[in-house]
Image 1 (cartoon, rainbow over the protein chains, first blue to last red):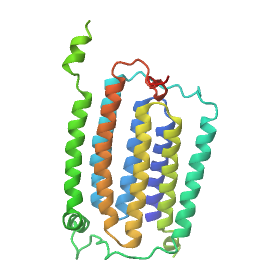
Image 2: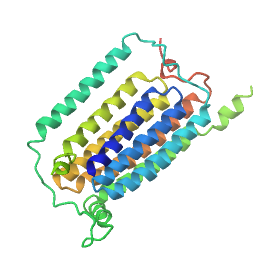
Image 3: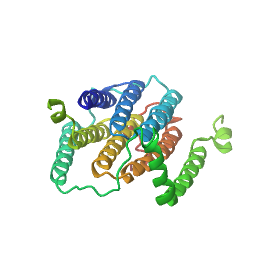
Image 4: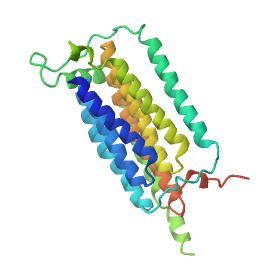
Amino acid sequence: MELFVFGCAALMVLIGAVGVITRKHPVHAALSLVLTLFGVAVLFVIQQAHFLAAVQVIVYAGAIVVLFLFVIMLLGVDRVENLQTEPLTTQRPLAVIVSLGLIGVLVAAFATGSGVLHERGSGILVPDSTTGSDANTIQLAESIFSQYVVAFEVTSVLLVVAVVGTVLLARRTKDSVSENPK
Amino acid sequence: MIALSLAPTASWYLVLSAVLFGIGTFGVLVRRNPLVMFMCIELMLNAVNLSFVTLARQLNDINGQTIVFFVMVVAAAEVVVGLGIIVAIMRNRSSMTADDLAELKG
């Protein structure tokens, strides 16, 4: 059963990822990204990370992709990238070599490192009749709000800084508005 | 017994995340639309998140899932700032590729 779910989710992830890098139109690339993000959410669910799967769907597939589509609409949807022309002649072969080499290095690292990995944590609660249906969420919340509460507060500062910075970046200042008609 | 031996192990998930990361790298290197380059960065972040969750399950450690939560928050902030920069640069421009951003070239 897990094999079947893994196969379907992996297919979703890979088809979506290839779609992101091959579709000419940015809107199609964004919709392929949604497919990949949902596939990753499914992979989170079958690995008992239920809260993260929910956050993945809400934050990534919801908020971030909507933000991408909003910016695409804002900048104009008709700008299709010409994938046939290649301004740097050796760019694509080099990119193929670099990414295949990166995959090879990562797989080799996983293969050599899998023997020395050993269980080090105190266990992840799997939701069942004894632990309750929201055991994963409770355990994650205990970890975030006790051990990593400082990091959590710093993240809130980061979000405020990001929002203020984006508002400053994206708004038109009075000077540029008054200068443009002249 | 056959179903047990065919259950996907942690290395399957790790190899999948490595392939996803490689595809994202290829996209960042090849695509010239800054928005699509951003989407490829999201692919790479998702690959890292997938390997974090897999290793959290393998090592029986909830901290792997905790850090994925923080990675998601930082990724959201990064996308907001990056798209703000792209909008600020591209607003008065007709073409939209990363190659056109060469105004400082001497």
